[in-house]
Amino acid sequence: MATILTFSSLDEALRRIEDYAQHGIEPKSGAWSLYKTLQHGAQSIEFSLVGYPAHKSSLFKATAGKLALHIFLAKGSMSHDITMPIPEAPIINDDGDAMQGFMRLEEAVQKFWQHTGAYKDHFAYGKLTKSQYDKIQALHLANHLQEGFIL
Image 1 (cartoon, rainbow, N blue to C red):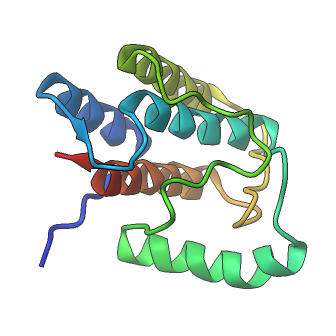
Image 2: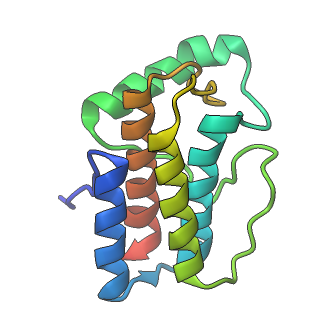
Image 3: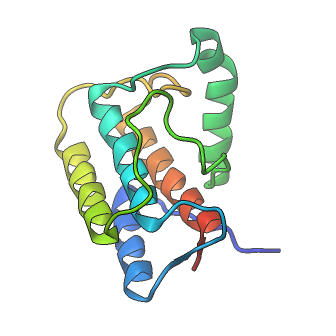
């Protein structure tokens, strides 16, 4: 059975992503580049602060969304289609410098930790606490790395 990659927090995710990048990280066939993956992760964190551009229905968020959130948090891992962009989010090019992607991710994490107001509802899970957002965003990054890259 394969080991599941997991991060306990966004801070751990940043440290581990930096380690992987320093040792070389190759995308699997058909997967996004490291640049696009890191930009996507940053985009998701940024939307937790300013609001997601589109949302699932309230019914979805209250049922399937909440169930998925609780399963992911309880398991300590996430599984989702890693080639699906955030609904109605600006398109991210596949080509770009991985260091730029990492710097944007790092900046998004810093803004997340410095944020003092309420967090915006997640497009699929609804209202989340800071702690839940920290964990689910970290699991989101781990899922992209595990499924999209040869580590």
